[in-house]
Amino acid sequence: MCPACASCVCCVSCVSSACPACAVSVTHVLCHMCCVCHTCAVCHTRALSHTCSVCHTHNRPAGTPVTRVTAGDPDEGEAGRLRYAMAALFDSRSDALFAVDPVTGAVTTAAPLDRESKSTHVFRVTATDHGTPRRSAMATLTVTVSDANDHDPVFEQPEYRESVRENLEVGYEVLTVRATDGDAGPNANVLYRLLNAGGANEVFEIDPRSGVIRTRGPVDREAVEAFELLVEATDQGQEPGPRSATATVRIAVEDDNDNAPQFSEKRYVAQVPEDVAPNSAVLRVTATDRDKGSNALVHYSIVSGNTRGHFYIDAQTGALDVVSPLDYEVSKEFTLRIRAQDGGRPPLSNISGLVTVQVLDVNDNAPIFVSTPFQATVLENVPVGYSVIHVQAIDADSGDNGRLVYTLLETGSGGGLISLALPLDYKLERQYLLTIAASDGTRQDTAQDLIAGGWGGRT
Ligand SMILES: *[C@@H]1O[C@H](CO)[C@@H](O)[C@H](O)[C@H]1NC(C)=O
Image (cartoon, protein in one colour):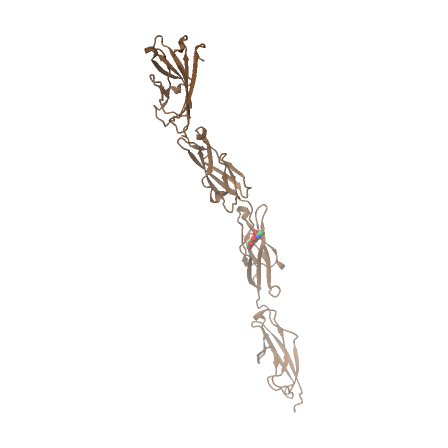
């Protein structure tokens, strides 16, 4: 329908084509409205309505062709020679950015464009003939500036920090990163990925679309205490290509009391002489805990085996002392069970610490003759070498400390068997009083032995 005269016969034809200046297909729609109308003076020119998408960007120079507007005038000579002009319809900023050649109708850019400051420019294009009176036609030209991917994605923060507990369930959402992009469409469509997803960082993953960082494996502080993920945001731009930005995500792992103390030895063994002075150190047990802080603070105690309370353990240091006198002759060995407990809430303990204290014998017991005094009667005529009496002493000590040597004082030593060394003569000597000593090397006991001679019938 002719906008000026309802009785005119008009036809509209539109042609689509791809923008030659862009690699991407940007559609031109070129529509001609031709009105053939001799009775209606206003419509002597052919009007055109024209919409074009151009992909000029701010780095394209001024003078880049945009489109060409044409009008027709069936009049001859000056009355049919047209002059084109163009004026911004809504925003006068557009006037400085585009120009139309008055003779050819070629529209070019007058300055570099920036879609982000203004993406659509609308003009009224006028074609005026040189006849008298001058007649003109008007059309609207809409120039849509296509987006060029000229903006990097920008993260809301260059660095993100988060702390998480260890032993999180898989799929736990740690945090969300977000990057924005000043472009439009795919040029602003940001996808995320982890640049350093290997190794220890494998326990995390990022959702490419939402930027949500989740756990995909167990997080163990004792294995890795702090993570540093490098996240990249890449837009999907094609013209001239995708652009990306990176941000750092630091994740600190908080400790859970998930480790019990571990003793440094399966069994500790110490040897102490029985005469050790009270409050002497025996040994030190140690247990380590892989957790942190109070979860790793170990306290020691004796669970069992401390009969008669001979031992004391320092709760903090694990130092084991003897606190009351030991007696090898009473107890030769102690087996103490030690607990190491950490300071977690709740605490974890290990009660498998074993300490064996072997008491060493000291020669602290003297030999003692049993059933003294000894008495024996012997006939005068018994042969030399005859066993007269067996004396015996005992020593509570062990080993060499209890090995006794008997001595007939002033006559030599022997094994406690007194035998006849020379013939006896009842008529000369009726009885003998012997002194015997039993010695363990250090200490000794003495006993008297009365040997009475008996008449053997010798003459
Ligand atoms: C206790 O410590 C020992 C090391 O001495 C270790 O073998 C054991 O597994 C620990 N027990 C617990 C419950 O962790």
